[in-house]
Image 1 (spheres, rainbow, N blue to C red):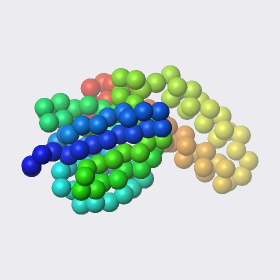
Image 2: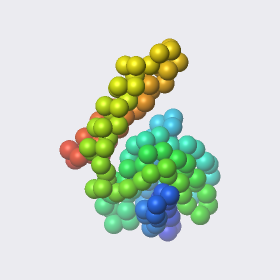
Image 3: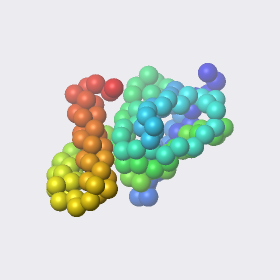
Length: 141
């Protein structure tokens, strides 16, 4: 590997990260994928989850992303996130409140379509909570 992979994580509020790294694991809509230097170009959507950045120094850094897009180009990886922050700033209490609100919406959903959509939201939030717990417990995956 020559120079490493240039990554930028951008949220509407700020530039969350801009550096050169060894690799990045990203929560794509179809599942996690890893990008390294000289990866083939592509673009995909992201689901809520955690980005693991493997630095050139061998240290991992973890970032929360609520969703958005990932664009892999010859210049590197750009994450355009709906919301993103370093894991240390991840708001566990807010996630618990979102889960409670989604479960309440599921309980009051009137049509099968509404129930299905509400169940997807509850499931996604619960999976996010499980991942956050694994990371917080020292287990990255």
